[in-house]
Length: 152
Image (cartoon, rainbow, N blue to C red):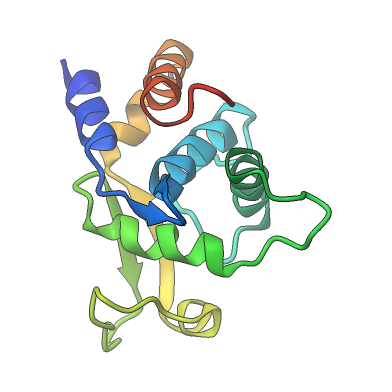
């Protein structure tokens, strides 16, 4: 039952528009985190910024979805936006250093701001626990793909 609740939360994240296409950066980030757990890279519920492995997975998926030439250097700005703005979801939290003045949600911070002021991002503990089980990861990956990027 809890898995379906988290699935509904993930599938209902707010998406925008990117040059006439649905902007799916947030679901791509969640999918990338699941893949990083699956291959054994993410062993604890802390996603640092920057995390070059998760960013590389995200960048590869992003380039495939938006048909961007992978030979071009993937701009970290494309990763910062969902990394930061996914915080509005009930299953993902940014953990800040003490006494940090948070930016308004309408702005996107710089990479330097995140490096200097953010401890890490994390999934809700219940979701993290569910993602330690292969069949749960497969279920969520299938649902995310089905909803957002079935053609990848």
